Image (tube, rainbow, N blue to C red; front, side, top):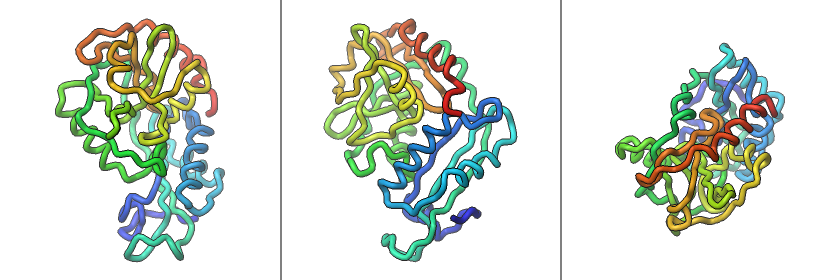
Length: 259
């Protein structure tokens, strides 16, 4: 395993042949590390990366911690190679860890966000679905549309018309006393906060089209940094915030779990 500065021969730079996880540091500790590592490990196995030990990856991530509250990003590249797409004769994966300030989501967590649907349609690729890989041009286009839309977030659907995710967060919606979230076997990123909530809440995963969501009673966005952020309007229709408060409380009371 190499730990070094990126170079132009790195496959993540050349082809987006890498994966990453963005981890919140809370009280100087990597929050939900087991879930982050599980996703990294599963992603490396699915993509056929070389094996790397958890202890070394975690040590590199912990070495970046310099403040009680911040963000640590762990990026794993398949490694370095010559020209071309072939993965033959590659060495061990490369690990890059960086730190940055933690964004303040307190206003969004309390007041909620305004959401509409994206015009962007996400491509379907089961071999990559769920993986937070570094080939993120779709996400760049998605985020650009959000920034130009006048809304706080946009919900993207795939090319078959099924809901997938927000630009940098997973989506849950509430209807008739039940939480639902899109299943991600065809497209999207399986977020760590999503994984945590699936363990703690009674949630139905499924494939939902726009008409299935249009009359929902409540909705929230979630990821490892923002936690749980309610949606106060969806398609200019007001949504209830009250069903989201218990989910936020669940997260608050389990915030040290998995650290």
